[in-house]
Amino acid sequence: MALSGIGDALMFTPALQKIREFNEHAEIDVLCMFNGVEELYKRLSIVDNVIYHDFMNYSSLRVFREVLRLRGKYDISFNVYPSNRKEYNIISFLAGAGKRAAVKYLRQGFSNLYFLNTHIVEEDDNLHNVEENIRMAEKVFNKKIIDIPGLSFPLTETDIKKGNEFLKQNEISEDDLVIGMHAGCSVLKNHIRRRWEPEKFAELADRLIEKRNARILLFGGPDETELKDSILKMMKRDRALRVDTPGLAVSAAVMKRSDLFISNDSGLMHISAALGLKTLALIGPTSTNYIHPWKTDYRIASLELDCAPCFIYSPKPLSCARDDIKFKCIKELTPDEVFETALNFLES
Image 1 (cartoon, one colour):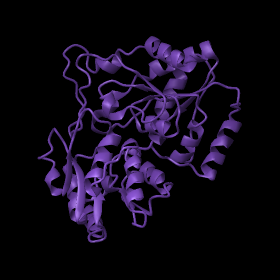
Image 2: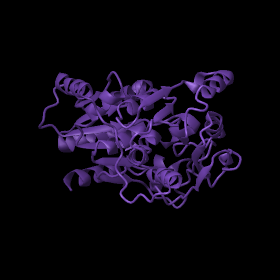
Image 3: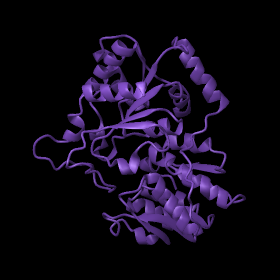
């Protein structure tokens, strides 16, 4: 069950590849509730069926009814890590697979009903999310996994064709230095506070244009159009453009042209890793142990304050305990610092 967002769904794909290796002839279905996750998993040949439900906008009765339709169909279920709300554990329990794998969270694990699952691994703050998912597969199949693969987001020929059409229409040549940027991230549970300010993205983009004559591509979902426009309006130079495409996969096809991708802690940061791009992640309250770009060349821009990381996996909204500057870890990360990191990365 991939009921969390795009980044978390991507970080389950290495475990999913191993699950398929262990069960060549099994039927593997994915239950999801975000369109981007559905789009991703429909492109994975190792997945047989993707079941999409807009659970966040369903009544409790309808959620219950749809989940009961799954009851008795499956032998094994996995709660993709991190998905530590009690609702997810209840859905897994009601779906009724004989083996139900999940992570026991170090914080609020009992109150979120981890014990409704049968194959449980205890959360380890030192591990990447990919590794936590792998541990669940190891637990269920009683096999040690040594060679953990990268993230997987395969693109179709149509995706690539549409991506190339976008690049051609906007006169982006093979000789251009292309920098992709994502200034957004999830807004659920106050995670909007993980974002670097748009005016800093604008300043950084201007400096990369001035220093390296870069073409800047601003990525983000339909709900981030206003954010992208605000960055364009604040910029002094005109070699930047907003990327609007028919869907996530076409955006990924355009992203693939980036010589460097600069992003907040977001799903697009993980897509960048899946595409094998040089990735510069702007990290504030999140632990880099959990979410650093997996198996790609990356750098982290972070203040590394003594109070960080303070973000933990919990159903509670993101909060900051500082008395001076709330979310100082991301607010005081300067364009100078990110620019120097980006420049050194490009020249390395």
